Structures are given as structure tokens and as C-alpha cells.
Figure 1 (cartoon, rainbow, N blue to C red):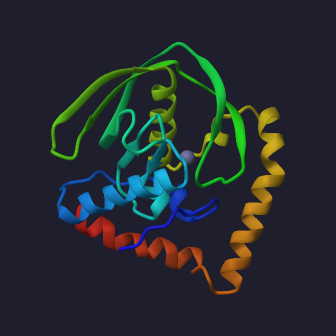
Figure 2 (cartoon, rainbow, N blue to C red):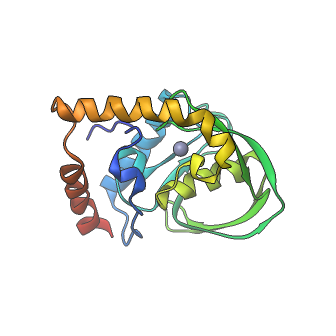
Amino acid sequence: MSLSIVPFPHPVLRYPAKTIRRVDRELKNLIAEMFDQMYEHNGVGLAANQVEVPLRVFVVNPTGKRGEGEELVCINPELNLPKGSDSDSEGCLSLPGLHGEVKRPERVRLSAFDLAGNPIERQLEGFLARVVQHEFDHLNGLYFFDRMTDEARCDLVQGLEELESDFRARQAAGSIASDEELVARLAEWESRYA
Ligand code: ZN
């Protein structure tokens, strides 16, 4: 299995990920590879749909450095009790080069399961709360720019158009499959784990 991070506007990034019903060795390997990809690209979080896997799991390390900070694997996550409001700049490994100011709740309660099937119940705040909310959004097919004001999003329009025209050109050249084929591929993961 060789994963790569797919860019906007790959259809999997608008595809609501499915609840995971079982965890096996292959899924654990996938999650280890998600950490590899995240560190390789200097990210602090990565959701499974970003590597073309339509399942509800994301990985996070707020330091972005292997061997430092805390690694979190969140399977079937839920976020509750949002409190406060905070605005900060965000980027995304699926939107290379683009950044924007995003307002989010400052604190949120995370419920999820770890790799061993143990429940995670945590009150999050600050940067970790932001990263987890960003990754959680991916599982629901949302990008950070969906949460920006129309005015702030204007600054991203050109960059988004460039990403889109690059992606469509690669589809036209045959180096990326059509949207229909890309979506059809997701069914195999769903039939095995969802
Ligand atoms: Zn992202």
C-alpha cells in the first residue's frame, strides 16, 4: 500500500467518511502510513479522506514532529460542547500553499476511540482544539475555507482556481482518473470497514 495526499478538488474531500466497524492489521498499517505522510509533509494532522480512504479516522500531532509531542489517533470521533470563539490562520495539506483566517470554537469536547479500541474523552483547547476541529471537518467533507467569511475567502479564490485547473488538466491527460472512477474506488474500503 502506498498512500499519497490528494489535493483539492479530489471528490473524496467532499465525501462524508463512513463509521468504522472494525480495526484490523491493515487498517493499523494504514494509520501508521498516515503519520508518515503527515510528518513528511510537515503537517500537524491528517484525515483518512486526504489519502483517499473514506473512513472516519484522523491522526494528529500538534508539534508536527515525530518523536515529539503527542500522537493522537481518533477513530469515529465526535465533537461536543463547543465553547468560546477564536480566530487563527490555517493551512491544509490538501490545499498546498493556501492559508486563511478561520474562526472556530476555542474549546470542544472530543469523544473517539483509539487504535486499541479504548474510548478517548478529552476536553480540548487552544491549538489542539483547532487542529482536531479541522480534521473532523475533513471527515464531513468540509475544507477550512468553508468556514471563512466570504470576504476572507476572496483571497483564496485564485489559488483554488489554480489547484482546480491543475487537477482537471491531470484528469484530461489521464494521470488522474475521472471523478466517477475516483468515487467508485471508495466502495472497496467501505465494504471492508464501514
Ligand atoms: Zn486539512
